[in-house]
Length: 418
Image (cartoon, helix red, strand yellow):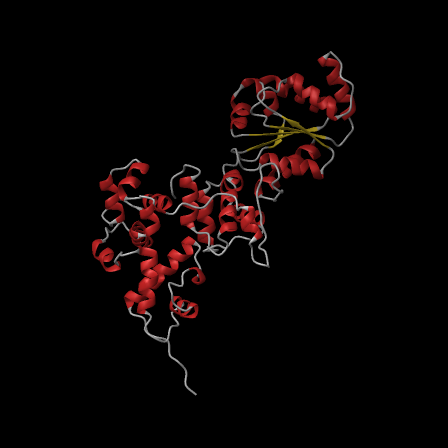
């Protein structure tokens, strides 16, 4: 019995096929869409390095289709890379040079000069970057260039495309502001602890953190599971009068014209109960908003949790008028600046419901993504993930990688590459 032995690819053939596979992945192309007049099986074998005969003609045809007349040897000779370029930087330079030669990019009249104009840099700088001559670390700038050459597809998938889907339809997941399901994070757990401490000890607790960490989401979930909690939504317009009005409404009491009588009604209703008052956005409220809460907590003997931005801590610790509040705080964890790497991973996986194909799923990837969104849950959930899901819906077989994420940030969110 004889077996056909796979053809031994030359180094250049191997490199060309690797670059062809990368470009097909980037563009969401399959062998079925890029046969170039050859049998589909031959195309698949060539791309999988399992061809039993010399695949040079097929490689040339695929290369011509994707990169026109670009020569890999010319690019390699031209790129005598500076020591500041990592292997990933050198590989990206090669892909950029090839993309600039592709029919798709040429049809759009995208050149080194137009890239320079859009990035606010000189044409000479762009030339240095992509030709390996840039003296400083080039990674950020190369990612920005790639985002221009291959921007992410961000439009919602069209209904017509959905109707033409394969019989076994892929699950479509979307993220809409106001309808994002609750996912437990370190923020929500610490908020729950602060609320429980205030309720059990019948004193004040404070939770402060940067914007976008999921504080309000955590509070809402706590109130949903603890009916004894009374939530007051603070704002720039919230004063002592608005605080009393919201408590009167929450307790089902009749409102009096007198603020003093309203406070007495609230105290009587809360006394000897296990209720908890939560003031969200406490840092935004007017200075007198916290005054009635101190009196109510003292006389009704109930807990109060104040939740707000980092500025809340500064107010309570440095402004004299809040001294009486600060002295009553029984639980005051250190302000939170970012959610954890584990939170970012959990939010990504849970909210995309496992529908996203990742190029990498190791610790380094999640640490990079955490840095990319600056440890901010809102940046991930409301800004990045909707675009990732839209892209995945159009190109489900294209793995999500750093290049794509940086492309979204560059072309849509106006933020530099990381």
